[in-house]
Image (cartoon, rainbow, N blue to C red; front, top):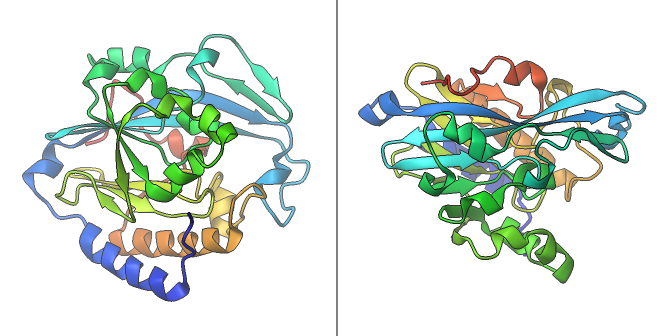
Length: 278
C-alpha cells in the first residue's frame, strides 16, 4: 500500500519537479486566482504531540485551519475541506488537548463569491485527517483528486472506511506522484508522504504574487519548518524528513512563497475571500 521513498528516488523526483514546475509567464497565469477561506480554529492546550523530540511539551498554541479555492480557466479546485460541517456554528468543542471552532461552512463562503458547491469541478485534500476532510459531503458533483496511497489508507479497514464514508461515492481520479491538474504547470499537487501515507501539498503559480506553496501538514508551525520537527502522530518520520528536504529544494529553486496552512502568521498575510491573490 505504501512505497517507501529512497534518497535517490527523492533527488530524481525533486529534479524533475523543479524543471517542470518553475513558473513560466502565460495567459493562464494572468487569469489564475487563489482565494483563502476560514475553515476553523484549533486551540491546543499542549503541543507535545507535534514534535517527536519533545520540543513542545507543555506549550500552548493556536492553529488556523484554512481551505482554498483556485480559479483556473479550465475549472475550479477547492483544496482542503476543513473541520466537519456538523460542527459549523456549534461553538467551541473540546476533545482532549484540542478545542475546535468553525463558524461558517465552505458552502456559505463560496456563496459570498457567487459560487455553489455544485459548480466546483475539482476537490483535493492534502491528507485525510478530520480537520482537512470534514466537508466532503458538500461536493457530491466534484471530481476528487486523490493520491493512491492516501486512498488506500482511507479505506484500509472497516473503521477507516466508516470515518471516510463521505468520500466513498465521489467521482474520483486516483493520482500517483505529482499531478499537474490542468496540464499547463500552473497548479500542481505535490507528492510529499510521511505525515500520512499519501500526504500532498499544492503549488500555485500566480502571475502577480508569484509561486505559492501550500504545505498541507508537512509543517504545522514556523518553528516546525525551521527545526524540522516531526509530529509523533505522523505515519513515517524518515519519509517525512525526505519530503521536507524535497519541499525545501523546490521552494528554493522556484522562489515560492511558503504558506504553512496551520500557522496564523502565514495565513494572516493572505487576503481573505472575497479578496484573492492573482
